[in-house]
Length: 297
Image 1 (cartoon, rainbow, N blue to C red):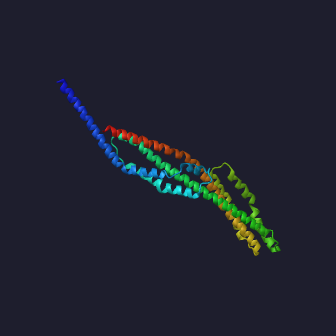
Image 2: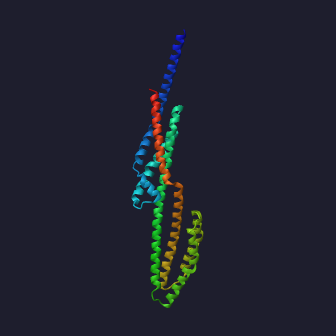
Image 3: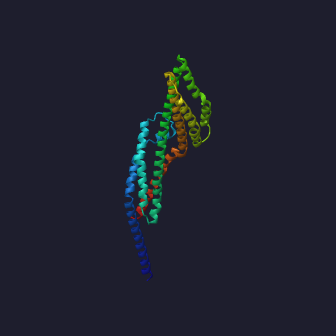
């Protein structure tokens, strides 16, 4: 009787184990079926990621290499905007649709979900870093153009002033120069504040609330002058060009200061370290999933 009971108990245990394996096998099959789209998207993500030279990304973020062509940065930006960001966002959306009831699968899935979220944040941080690089390059180019324009206008104005003029022309030119010099000291003193330790917001306030009104006031006074001689008009024209260019120049300086502050927040190099992290998570996920599948055999 005891032997019959023992055999029956063992049979029940075997049946229960088989049932558990069968249930796990079914759950795994359903899970992998629901994950097919994410797997396909992830494969595409890695394909586009492999097109990126990660060493160059570090140079882009720190601007330590002058040989990086703008075309290379534009190509990188296109890959990020057209592929990495939308693919990672779609993976996150698809992830929300996955419903897992099996606790063993849920535990393994957690690593993969973390990996996908890391891919999304990495892609967006990389995109933001690239945008800042391009913005910095454009602002720097504009600063150079503005500086060259001011120098050219100043040189041309000086050449006109040094010519021989009629008494009327001399008087009118003096009127123009008086207005130009009227607030030059005030302007210069406030410009030096942009080199201080204040943050970008305070420096922007100085530009918009102090420098711009000074320049606008000088522009208005120059335009109100009633001039008759061509040389005086030319000197005024060159002076106006300088003042308008100064407005552009100081605003671009603020843009560069803001870009620098934003770059400190993004820290692209830290973002790049996420690649190694999500790759390890992916490897762990697939290893554990395969182990679980082996248990059903």
